[in-house]
Length: 436
Image (cartoon, rainbow, N blue to C red):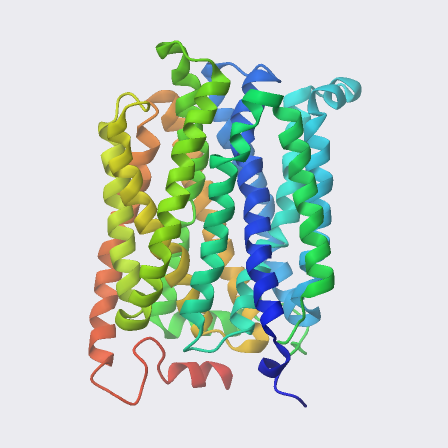
């Protein structure tokens, strides 16, 4: 049988990079237009803004919980490509429904906000079948040496997609309205389905056993503390960009009345700032790719979480989000987030046997979703009851707690360097796991 790595060509790499951007554009755009759509089309008042916006995000993430893990297992059994293709199509269908939430909600007698909930759920279920497969395929296409650079390039394209949304696409509503942008969301998903179907291949060995390999995943997590660190990083860091995209946008939109700015202009202003966040991530990624190769995965997680945590805590000192002072914490958050987008995934993939890699990453992503649910739900309550800065203080505190844990794990990584025959971040336990 031909070596799977020999089946992968440069065009497959390039297509995966493009899919990373396409998927991120869809997911980011869906979140970015949400506060503006609820405020201006469905007439949601400020009193319930934090609760409703957060609840929509939490409901979609809860449903993803039951889907992501099982789809990870199915990708081990039947391949990543068909699952990602169907996911894009489902996401496009949900995006089209969202455009007509007000009309369809009245027609069905459930109200526009309730129907928008439904459409966002469909969109989330679709993307829940896509974005985990991107990281899994990246792992399939690489080995230990090439993985940091390849995943860094993938994350670069994700950040580029998010940057395009806020710097370009979120400037469209003030010129031509929201409907055109929301229809564009569906078109982006259909493009993703076409690219996946025609330009991607599966190379990982198929899992023969029926049922999710829970025991093997448990053994993997229990035996290696660096895998546990990766899972913890997913819990704390996965919600960071959701916080920036959701709560910062809400802060601008609902603060606009106090500074005599209309909501569309405020959303555009927030979009530029969030676009700057994405741009900062973009220019930070090459640095972090080299840093991972030279200093290791664990050191990267430690430093990235520390920078991000400090940035979020500094947001607590911001009173007016339209002031230039907000650029300092945003730059720190973005720089740290770039590291946290790459290193935990690289580390967990390093330890994942090829035939259950989808299942392991499914568990990894479920932990990340749990983090999003927890921090977004609590953050929404804090936004309404304490103030717009409170959610950022919450996530900043969490990130610094994880920094302490990462530094504790790092002591074992430093000790591992005394054995020159083993890589710093991958030890003999990998062979033990694969033999189970």
